[in-house]
Image (cartoon, rainbow, N blue to C red; front, side, top):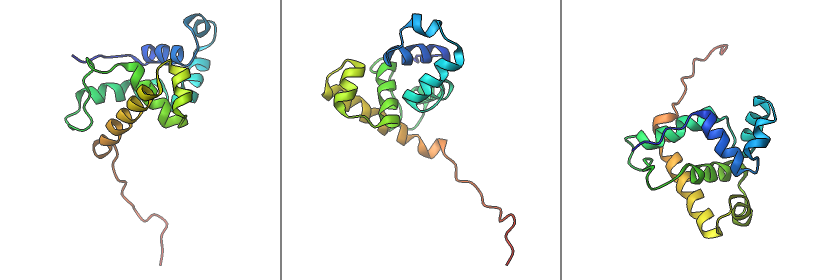
Amino acid sequence: MIQVLSPDELMVVGLQLAGFDINRQNRCKRITNLNRFKKHYGSLPVVYSELWSDLQTTTVPGARIDASEVDVESFLLGLHFLRCYPTNDHQEGMFKICMKTARKWSWYFVEKIAALKDVKVRAGKTRGIGMRY
């Protein structure tokens, strides 16, 4: 079963994991929460909401995840790893999990996201604009 998360739902979970409880999130402007999320995870929640959905629905075998086996917190752990490249000790403290688990999920999602490259990244065409010989 696919677990759909709106960008706002993902942002709330991500900010809670980063140490911003719901009361603190509610006391500030949306732009502040978006900036906090981006600083911890690298992009806006709308991007990762779509990526979370894509990982569950893709036909690429190496990229597909089963949402009944993994959770969004592990996904966010992987995104944080890609953004900050923290040590396992740092992730252990922030995400309140053991180092072995932090390493396992970080690399699990790095590999899954990388497997989407061929379907998500397209090579641009060069037009030669302004080129004279």
